[in-house]
Image 1 (cartoon, rainbow, N blue to C red):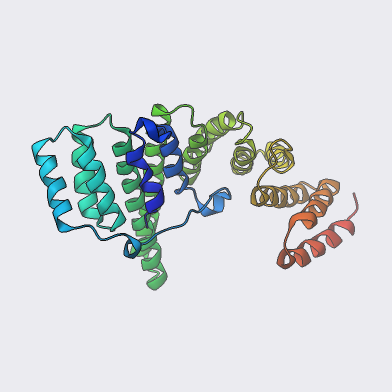
Image 2: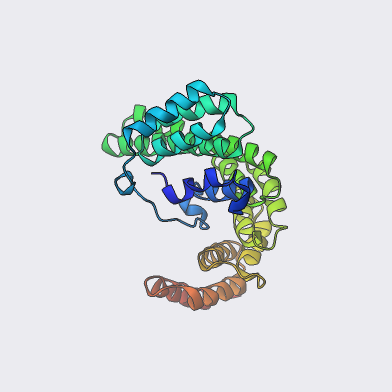
Length: 295
């Protein structure tokens, strides 16, 4: 589902008076495609097509005619593509945006809209594959899900690579890029991107959490533990609550695996400060177990 509020920012980015740069637009669009389990997604309000103001048929015809008369003018592609996206007419949107991209490849709002559509379609295919597997757990559907996951990760990597190439100031794209690489088990490449992202104060907690996950998979437990600790303990700026809680939980589990019982107790105590009532009883039981162990 497309977010009409987010998408509507694209055409404004070409207006000098709007105060919104193409790079800012790219950041907002890409943020919607962060994995939920990445713990730093900021879901925005989604508006469905039924809430959109009806577009007169004459407007569609006028824009299509403008495109035929002035194919190198990007604005009709942007407006018509926006209309089709808002109404979830994905095939029409793809036709218009692909045509516009071929003739106006330097128009950033148009490029962003096209990239968002490609990501959305890849995600749609992934969700459909999950549904098919849930309804029929056959080998064919298992393979279909694996293929959809790979396609979505590759699409994310491509979009992130291209956007970062256009907007190297948007370091947050590195984290999204790294998530795609992690999904394809390209952990060393992900680490390189996350180390760069961690240099930015506003990103370092998120990047450190992802780094810890990569290090854990790469069998570098002490590096992972250090990254989790950093993700949870940064003070300026402090990590978001979900990031802090997840980092502490992973640090506690890893410290226990490494028989660092004193550290595991410390992380369990920190979890009790932040966790909700549902989680609290589990953490209290974990802490009692850790306190019964010899150091």
